Length: 164
Image 1 (cartoon, helix red, strand yellow):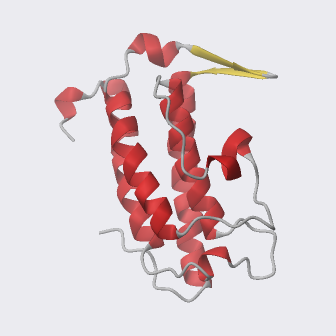
Image 2: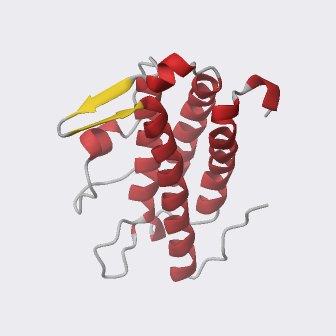
């Protein structure tokens, strides 16, 4: 990333965005599709749900910036659906392809976001917040979900995530 092309306001968020873009792949590295749906007799979200929800949120954020794109697993995640016990989730390879499709598009939108766009207020039933607050929350949420996948790696006896 070239710091001169990013506003001071967005620099830290873009740093996190780029880290998460890389860590998504590293968190999923080597995990089997069968293990990615394991919940170890808990109600915890499995790896496939976590990964799919991350992708869906990048697509949703891109929509806020005017991109009319839909994730390949939209039906499983639209309207912020929680985990569905009887659903068949895409393969991790399919998720990686969708992640690689949306990430550069959203990155470009974020780099070019104007203060006017970032200050636009989003209205939802019972709440409102600016686009900037939404982008900031999504950066936090991505770190949280990737951390959950990293924990699942250890619980399922995979090596820890490689952050290099």
